[in-house]
Image (cartoon, rainbow, N blue to C red):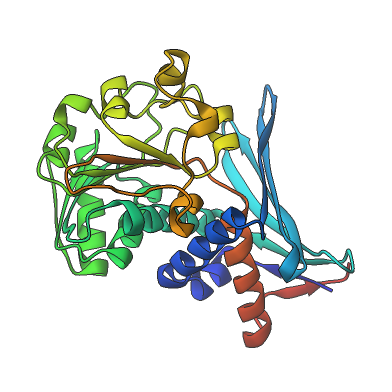
Length: 317
């Protein structure tokens, strides 16, 4: 039987603390050859686009994919499908909007653990939508954050975000009037937007800062200008995915400043086969585009908890 688990049940099961642990393990396992990840593929039609990400963890008898369809006028539906790799039987279909937000944030939290200064305490947020929730919450899991500054092009959204996250996280959090004001004096900068033109300028950056850039997973999107990337030690989640869709990095690759084949991956930093931060003055940048294994590990956890707590429904498949 295949277990169907809905968004409400996923929200009940999945915590940020556990997801950070699982995403870090996924990245570690891939860097050491125990997990497989296939870059996203897209199929576009006039009405919208279908996107599919695939991965496998042979040691867990786990293989699966995440599929999501974006209808231009109706939003996006996300699902993760899991299979038992030995028996070929499907084991779960999981509604994955909340899962995607939490695991994307968790990856940035892991990046902050390995790339931000250990005494990082101030976060600057550029973007205050749904995805920003996970970005901030995860960084608060991996670093002792005491102050957060939030910029959004919609001031009402920034204030709403501050009210909700201040109550949830118990940190000082307040809106600021510009992206530059969010960046100046911050230890960690989270950029999570759908911008097609840069919203973070290299001229604003200060020595020792760490940047999580998680919105630029398309060549049509750019969150950082070229100066910001040039000033940074760049780490990606996966070279193959970055090559296919990193709007922030593409101009620097074309200019010969960066090389897709030599960009360090976060998993390599975790296991020590690539350097992390080398000094307190270094500016570091994590370019996050998304990997299927970041979904599969939490999804398997969700399935196991759902079975134990009798959540979800079994489908006669």
